[in-house]
Length: 517
Image (cartoon, rainbow, N blue to C red; front, side, top):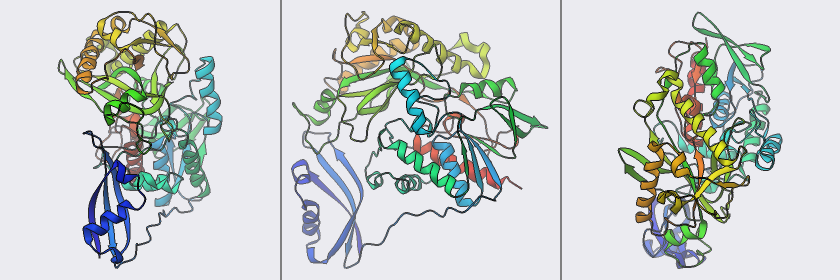
């Protein structure tokens, strides 16, 4: 017999070996009959002074634990029909893996470098302020997901099989703890190896992955995609293309717009990244005056507030993490956040962003049509570049100074490696964003006492929350006017994170294969 139960442990009980089994024995009063138990979900409830660990379990009574080994039916596709995939981020990777399962050969074209070589370009942007437009925190093997916190939480439960994506990650090297945790993450230090393992799986079963291979043109005849041009020189014939280039591949948006391929402006969000000492967030969330208990992870938070009919909210919160330069071209400053697997850095950071409605909030940009949101992003990123000092040094301000409208005489220590420059972000940001952020921070301070503090910095700008452009597709996931083109993932406007992008990649692979004669 298998029983599904829930058990709650206090922090003190969690620290005791065997306490979970003891609680189960008391609940069933049949210790000797419990053969095994399997943890299905684990979460922490720190809403009150007493912290609890909540477990959801299957308990096996007089019945053995089943073998739940993870496997995938990847096929040898070396001589199979091919599907071309542009981009090797989460959407492109899972599209390729799904092709292997369905017996089709994925040919992946990635503008950036593999994870090992990509590190040199990340070092260059951090230390020398040099931005490689094809290899950075957004472009390269694994896309923006490789060098990220690796957060796997998603609300996109109806778009695909979340569990499949998690199991695929475990199959390729992630800890099976991600199958249990309520808010799982992997960590920027572990993701590169997992991404490399995915590539090796694709190659082992006969797929292809080509790095330093940038798609620079599409050859279209009679509204059908016939070929793609690589690196301005090589023409490659194709029948079906999954376009999984990510939300920062602006050259693709410009190319599609130039060729009069239908695009649509999409609402998005922009703002800043706020950084606190992790101990402040721990003390608020865990109601502790000193260091948090060793069993407790670095505390996270999620905040949202309506201000003047626009949402102001936290985005990509990174406990025990660091801020990184996420620019994809010279002359711009973009910040993002990430965390190692242990989340043991001294700082907590999160994007705090404001909803931007492209139909109402940017009348001066109407001349750019479907690309108006993109141009709005670019202008703010150029402003950040100039106010930071015309390098990857980012403009920053103490949180309280930003709200009070005064320039910071000095700044707090930061995890942002290129450095910070004190700048009047309160007056530099557009009123649409700045005024709402100022009010939002005050309200957040009421929800989390101690959050609104001069010990926090805000760093600009957080502008790449999602794509400002949607590449339309029909009910078959194909572009409505260009046959053979399947917009996919974050770049198409259909995902918002590793898991949702991966699920969309699988769906697009299935759709593209279904369309192959």
